[in-house]
Length: 373
Image 1 (cartoon, rainbow, N blue to C red):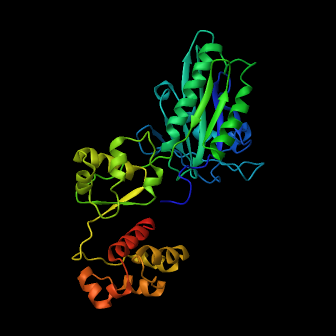
Image 2 (cartoon, helix red, strand yellow; image 1 turned 60 degrees about the vertical axis):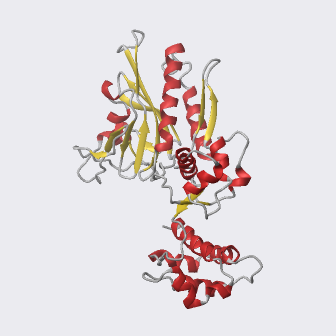
Image 3 (tube, one colour; image 1 turned 30 degrees about the vertical axis):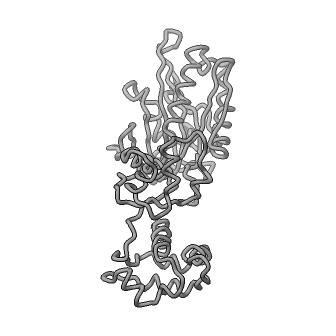
């Protein structure tokens, strides 16, 4: 399981509207000055500027290159500018077909995600009010966990505008700056926030890490716990999951667990898949003495990591036996080769006399190498 956070860091949050005189414009941004918006900067495009291509993707699509290359000059007053708003303005405040859809656009180093909204009404000068609240991340960030956040913020703000003209009114719109500040600070620091807007509306957000769907669970696979499952079980858990957890010991395969837990086989597969989804178990093949194991390229990692040295001996040694030293255990791992079964390997190196539990020995190597894959 990765040691770093699952959630990408927000580099900037900004609120943009369509101004009847200026067109798309950023009204507020946090932190200030990270996105270039000066009219001078927008009009000084030149061939000497380093080109920065922009790409755009709608919900469910991968970003694709734009047919048009846009040059972005350096900002005259700051070296911390992320990009120029002019490069992405047509995606931040787009035409009607893109409004009400999740839009992700990209510059050379950053990705911008937003949910543009267009509200119709005769009270507006052009009979519509168009806005977008966008989040900026580094280009390589996985934005899956932020998609529902962006949608919800836009829906709440749209409801506030329809009820009380919160965004378009000069009296209430300055409150957006404080909202942006709280979104930026709270989501980066706590991954959740609660922002009251008026007596009837508030922004309640909590970010959950995104996990990929697990592979299909096979009957012969052996679930191997990565944490102490029994200490995590709570009374409100699904009954099948609770019964399945009792029989996960690194030895029983899925079909055997279904028999021991007296559960339907299909429900047992689903319970194991649920635990795989949250990355609290992994699955390995059934251990047999006829199995063959070999080293992978990243096995050097085993020799260099101090915590691996400390964990291996106590984990793989049988109860009541002296713990073998790490160099000896590492030597045994290095002797696993293609064409040599576990039984032959044991006989060649007198593994039984060392007090090593061979099943735990092989599973430890599989776990650690998989973590560093």
